[in-house]
Amino acid sequence: MKEAIKSHGFTEARKNLTALIDAAQSHQPQRIRKRKASEEDVLVVTSSLLRAAMSVAGERRFESAVLNEQNGSVTMTLEPFGLAVNARSKSEAVSQLMQDVRLYSDEYFARRSLYLQSPNRRSHLPLVLQVLLCSTDDELKELLGLA
Image 1 (cartoon, rainbow, N blue to C red):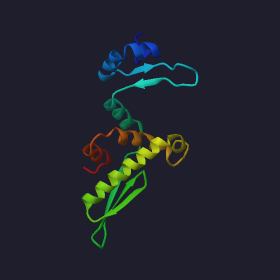
Image 2 (cartoon, rainbow, N blue to C red):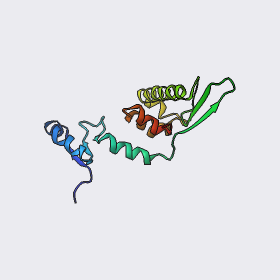
Image 3 (spheres, one colour):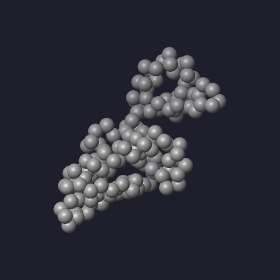
Image 4 (cartoon, rainbow, N blue to C red):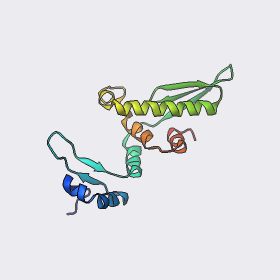
């Protein structure tokens, strides 16, 4: 039976990196086996395939709320990250919220061992990965439901 995910030794993967990447680009994930016991296998997968997997992996989705304040400003919140911003206009609030989401996601990933042990933050991982995979503001707005 053919392997669902082709597996390569490290030396083989290094020698055939172009072919390995070409296969991954065709949405065929490639596994590079660990070199020693203290390591983990590495999976090479396209960002679009990972994004698709992350979108169905977690039951949690982003939920935003907009509140027009009496002073004319706009407050926006974003769950499940627990973020809130206040700005002079909705477009400014959206921009600030997107910036805060990126900062949170960068921090989460930089300190993932800490966040993954936190009961109220562990479940954010699929959403954080989706944020990190957004390469444009439009992609992020769509993901956050702000488009």
